Image (cartoon, rainbow, N blue to C red; front, side):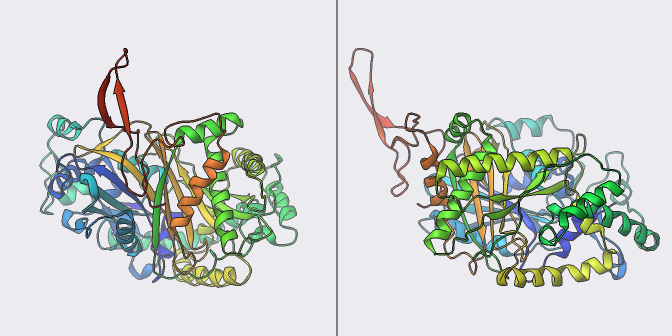
Length: 548
């Protein structure tokens, strides 16, 4: 067994009646002429369960909550507790799909089983299917989540069949939920390992309680060194001076780039959230984004952040709620070390940065985002922020488990009045630029979806680059965001605003998909002599999904 880190456990602690702490993704697939079905998915999951530790581990709680839980092998794993299917009513539109996914995304995972679910969704037009998968944030972060997804995907339509033939006899759980013997004939219990047991857990809890004061002092000093980068704390008088002094005391004498003001303004996004969720999704051409990045000597991520900035500005302006100050965004950053990809759990930190939503000119917003993100990345490269982990380690596990829900709810109420820690979370996860297949069906799009909390706000935007497109997933609390689809429309408009008129491709020159009728335009086929040979549908590389 492996004990959860303080950060992993915090993702468990943050869950309340209004907060579900899992990350998720919605894959849109060609059904592969019916090959993508529940039985095929069940076989695939069981064949590859051993490739991702997060999928076969369940929580083992320490008695009385005296310490952080442990991950232990689920010896009675049953695929029926994790794999489900449903069918949308006709016509199976994107709105209907988003509504069904939003309902699934709002439900918390059952902690008596490994913390993940997969839902196969039928009823989409043109023979497509959707697969919505969610995994608890205590088990994975964005990068390990993408790696977990990759274990289920193949490079060719028949890859799942070839890999099954080449694989060794499975030693994992069976389809009916009864565990198999270990490969050497040992029992399931011996093969999986029982770990320290109740007595061992309590002994570990006692030992950690004795050393907790020392760890608290160390965490406090290290956290003080990042005080100028911590939400709310950075607004306290003398925060920068305290941070410099703490770094000097701990021997960190190298200067760090000064951060701009991280005082988040009040917005409709911030305040207590409800248990309800709304979801929207859509795609943009990665080629277009790269053209903008190249023309302005910026990174793709800088352009993505600018698109989000412009979309948020437009959405807030429409409602007369645009603050005079820049919004402040939290950007998750992977700090997973080489060789640690097989470890379950979180290897992340957070980088805070202002978004120039107060700048009316699109080009100037792009320039400002580039400069701001460069400063934030330089600061992070010199000294990766550890305040998130240190904050989670500051108090004993029992106290943290009890205090976290109350602190988050209180922070949400303060955010609704005047003091939001951040306005929202924006995450950009890189993905493969070639097609992938699931059970023989080609993955057309993959829309990531993240967590909402009272502290981080009622809106999150997550982006995943895949096969020439940027796939955006937007999750919102409907009490905080009244129209989640308009944000996707504003993202598209923001890209159009930045594109050079001399640069064109099929998505901007009117050649692509009619998003209202979903019909493909036709092209005339001619030979070298000008002879006509009929017409055919023009097939773009990817179909942009989502209303608007």
